[in-house]
Amino acid sequence: MFLKANVQKNVRKFIGDKKFYAMVLGIAVPIMIQNGITNFVSMLDNIMVGQIGTEQMSGVAIVNQLIFVYNLCIFGGLSGAGIFTAQYFGQKDDEGIRHTFRYKTWMALILTVLTILLFLTYGERLIGFYLSGSSDGGDLEATLVYGMKYLKVMLIGLPPFMMVQIYASTLRECGETVLPMKAGVAAVTVNLVFNYLLIYGKFGFPALGIVGAAAATVLSRYVEMAIVLIWTHTHKEKNRFIVGVYRTMKVPAVLVKKFIVKGSPLLVNETLWAAAMAMLTQCYSVRGLSVVAGLNIANTLNNVFNVVFIALGDSVAIIVGQLLGAGKMKEARDTDNKMIAFSVFCCTLVAGVMLSISPLFPKMYNTTGEVRKLATRFLMVQAIFMPQNAFLHAAYFTLRSGGKTVITFLFDSVFIWCVSVPIAYLLSRYTQINVVYILAMVQIGDWIKCIIGFLLVKKGVWMQNIVSAS
Image (cartoon, rainbow, N blue to C red; front, side):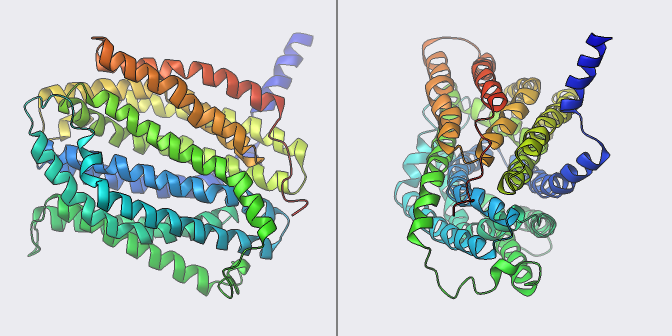
């Protein structure tokens, strides 16, 4: 009886009631839908480009990998202030939220300007970094040309992306997840429609190929920006922080210092992590252009399925952050345990679905049999390790919710550079191991990270209120 009671007690630690799951899903589902639709349309976009040819698809994939680094820089730059936003909201401190909003604006503007200058100056060299392997029947020079054409148009879409991230992140941290979802749905609809019109030249529109794909993406970002900004400023009763937010762009020095202290590790972390992901792709790319194309196909579908654990991780940051800001430490721990377990359970189910369709998805691309074969195997590896990645993502956001940004820096980017990248670099260059097994070995290396994450979450080092003295 004692053993049975003990088991039931432990189970209750990780399973919530209906009210709990309604609360979690109320925040997670809108984020999931927005990201899911975005990634689904990106997948359709990718398939459309994939119908043109392997070189075009590979050029677009390389540029998107580079822009992904920028996207995560923005995410990291805003996340430090975002920790404070969630906790300020828990304390009902509107002026504190305004300060975080202004800080976000400055940070995002600086990062965007620097990124545009970098790509305009070194874009060709950065794309060429991924074209050092064999051509595998493809044209490396053509891939570079297509990549540059795509990049130049995509740069026009960085400013609206920046503004959406500033506004949408603040809205989410204040509990408003539905509007960003609606704006995202509208944006991806525009993107999908104009992809079809501009890539293939339908209904009298010019057939622009990959330039058309980039133009459609840029247009959709301006639509999304318009929706988010207009709604926020016309619903001031819901978004009290927006009242007077632009009267000044000054942020108190004492708060700037706090934001930088908490935010700099996140900015550096996201930048280094994104750079590490780019480096991992480069390591795989030395095995040939077919590997670049195969990874692109696999990552496209993988991103669609990853929205589940990404949305649940974001929910951890929001819900647990608000509880910590309100001083409800015991409730924060209990909620966090249940959310991590829920995320891993959901992603185990999702991984099964992804594994079952992995042989079918690559057949939708107009590419070689070798590329399709590689894509299928990459997808199978990604599916098998999805529950593991769900745990790591939730653990990361748990640590971040309490402002433990130095720990998250060590846990995330330092680990990937010290463990994951060396594994991929050494195996890809100094062995003849199949590239699919190299990808699996990189994932196996994360077992060390799982142990570290489990111990840090269990110890409760993240349980602190960081705005009580602000």
